[in-house]
Length: 382
Image (cartoon, rainbow, N blue to C red):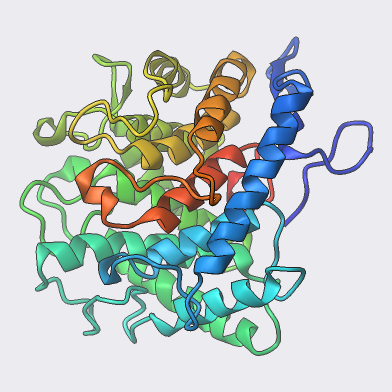
């Protein structure tokens, strides 16, 4: 996990100082001009208060509070929030807490490779589960597996062998699910829920997380078939809608809705494929600028989730850089900082489907969003 270094070799550049400005070519360099001094200092204080609040919420078993169906995905997101600020397992003021979180995540893996508190443990993976369990387990697995691969190489002698086995098993499960037969050939290469969903076999949201896990694992040295990554990128690229100039949840008419989260997920996937400045990514970035996050905790439609979209869009706009980052980040930072609660947390998601995950979930997402650009998480590095 490398810190972001400035071009002159002057060392680490704090998150609040980063902005990408256009060069004569597609190259971009950091600049301190995006936030003024007062806002930079406010951001640093805000993030620190948020981390301290999260640390106080951790349970004795290493988890962070949420509903059982959201575990260990919510715990993994909280772990990522600390990692995004350069905190490491076993080191510094939060090291022991992060170590316990890894132990908790590892303990939730089933023999078939799925990482979810509530998931089928049959091998091959059983799809005869309820919609609720199947949908939640898909997210828990991808996000938790991503955290394990992002931490790989930094774990102690006790955790490292366990993590190696866990990532290998998780990869096997992910590749097995990607290979499930799709009713529509256009959905090949993607992922969806573990149960047999009636409205499609792939969606951009879960596929985006699975793609990040595959790429993270490959970067960590695990054996990941290149064609699996290529197929996932191909599916996500097909989710782009020329008509609406952004990415949609699915690449067929049954789910033709558009959210800030899906716009961000599509841009991130293009960045992971080395297509930072593709026409689809740029147009989706324009779409995000037209649908900002100024109205805190307000969703655009009944499918849009404010905080989930915030995370995806912030990381996506950093990947785009240039005027997208400059226009998006400062105003978004102001909104996030203005709505932090006195105890350091952020309010639970107003959308009822995500509201049940609680404030640890939204606080982690806000910290991850504010951390876009500091490049402490390898998967979000440019």
